[in-house]
Every structure is written in C-alpha cells, then in structure tokens.
Image 1 (spheres, protein in one colour):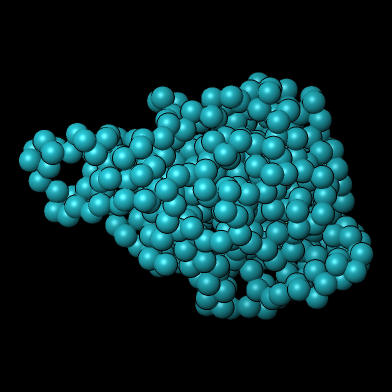
Image 2 (cartoon, rainbow, N blue to C red):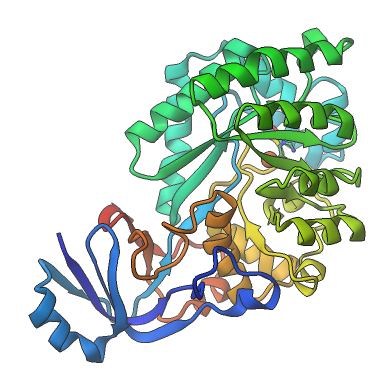
Length: 416
Ligand code: NIG
Ligand code: FE
C-alpha cells in the first residue's frame, strides 16, 4: 500500500549524508523541509516538497493521500537503552530517596536492583510480558518506534533466560522493533555476594553460551562502576561474549569514574552508556574507537546526580545517542520527549543535536541506522506525526505529549 503525506508544515528528515551516525557539530544537520511531502510503502520511496507532488501522484498512483497542514513529522525515536522487563515496584524506595536517602545507600542495604531481582525471579513469564506491554504501549504513544531491552533482573540462569524469552515474546506481539541485550552482569545475586568470581564463572560458562546458542540476545552489557563490576571482571565477561559472537555495550562511569569508558573503547563497544563521570581520557578513547556515547539524562535527573558532559563530548566530536534508561529504580519513564527536554535544558544540547541523538544515533548504537533512525529514501517509514507546526515547539512546549500518530514500516500503528 502506497501512502503520500503532503503539505506537512515541518518535515524533519535527519540528513545522514550517507553516514551511519553523526558526530560532534554534524549532529546539527537535521534538515527540515517546510511544506514537505513523503511517499512510502513499507520503505520510503520519495521525499520532497509538496509543490513537486502533482507529477508524482500521476506517476506513482498512491493508494492514499493525506494532507497534514500544521503538523510536524519526525523520525520515530530509537530508545537504545531500557530495562523494561521486570516485576515489582520501588516507589517506597523512591519516597525514601525524597527524604534524603541516596541510590547508593539503598543499594548497600540490599535494596535497589536486588529488590527488583527478587520480584522478577518470583514472576511468571506471562506477568513479565504483561507488565512490559503496558510500558511499551506508553513508549509507542510517545513516539518510540525502536527499543532496546536488557535483561539483568534475574541474575540466575533460569531468571535471566525467562527475561530474555519475555523480550522475544514482546517482539512477536508488538509492531515496534525490539533489540535484546543480555545484562547478567547487572549486579551480584545475594547467593554469590561473598563469592563473586563464582557468579562470573556462571555468566561465562553457562549464561553466555546459552544466550548465544538460543540467539536470545545480540549484545552483552555489564554495569562497570563503583560497587558493581570491576574492569577486570567485566573484561573477562566481554572476552567470553566476543568468543561467542556477541557484541558489547557498557554501563560506564555512572556513579563514579572507574575508566569504564576506556574499557568500552578497548572492546569496540557499540555504545558506552551513562558516562556521568567520564574522564577526559575516556572521551578520547571513545573518539578513537568510534563508540557512541549514549546519554541518559533522565537518570541523572531521577537519582539527582550531575549530568554527563554532553557539550565537551560534542566539542570532541563524539556521536551522542539519547535514551530513557527506563527502569524501576534509577529512571522510571518511557517518554523520550521528556528525555529530549532534559537534554536541551540540563545538558545544553541544541534541539537539532537532541533530535539526531534520539533517532539516527540511537539507531546506529543498535546497528540499525541502515534501516531506520532517519527519513531517507530506502529506509523504513518509521515516524511520528506531531500536532505542532514546527519541531522547535516540541522543546518549547514541554511536559505534554505532542504525538498524534505513530507509523512503523509504513503502517499507522497508533493514534492518540
Ligand atoms: O541503568 N546502572 C545500572 N542499572 C540501572 C539501574 C537499575 C535499577 O536501579 O534497577 C541504570 O541506572
Ligand atoms: Fe541502564
């Protein structure tokens, strides 16, 4: 089915100029077509100005034509870092944080990630799928068309596999594109608290081989930080992952600088994520390896920490992606529009940089920028129609959902 959308007030294409990702100041190259038009089936067939559509209609004979006066179209958001498959609720811990307890203090008492691990272990796969479905529906309603989901709340072979199978089921149920990541090295399970190397043996000798054999994940991630995995422990896990054909992404330098970004670079990780405390050396190493810096400003906001140095990264020509980190502890939102707002106000990114980071560069972090992340001929027709006359209004009028319709692969899959 061929569709033509025309008279679009603001059509934002994110002009990749044939590159997989945009680095540094190139992130400003979003390219906006005023009074734009787009023709697509599953993929984008043509993009241009509405004044050019008369001949196009005669030639291409679209099955349907819609006029979108006073509307803006942007590529679907690519949320390249989430933890949305879990059970339980940590609002009581959140309330404690509001009374002054820190994320670290709660974790040290055996709460935090381990609270969610307990609930997730007890939950059935059906329950996990049902919980995540609610979050996914919200994510789509706010304009997300591709999402990465990590395991990491099981921390035993059975419970990690259960989470990854839940992610697989979600991928079958939902039209949104879902990319799975294995995060067995999220924390240490209570039963191996005093024998951490034994748990790493299980990750390397049992979990990674099983995940690879059943193709339950494409990536392996680890939480490399103060109080969590050391550089040496993560290195062992990543070496095993590479041996099994899995690629690397890293939770790096979120709570303190441990030079985890340099480890990500050493393994040519697709992304190093969080980076609140990244060092100058870390920035340099990421630049050399071409690793994407995935920033999660919702987390800095939610756990009340300093924001990642986005401007310094852009000055040093890194490619930045923006994602939600949606999880029950350190950032409970699936709304990418809020993340954009936090990025421009608190990390001082421009609106154009933030849009590129939330679309094309997010897709590049998931190795998908050949098929999505921007509106260019040959790519999938994944986009949102916003009830706005210009994309800058998305940042200007904050805190409300501007998405009217969401389309994935040329099909309208959601209407608000
Ligand atoms: O990305 N950093 C590690 N993991 C999550 C937090 C998970 C949790 O608190 O449940 C994060 O911030
Ligand atoms: Fe995370």
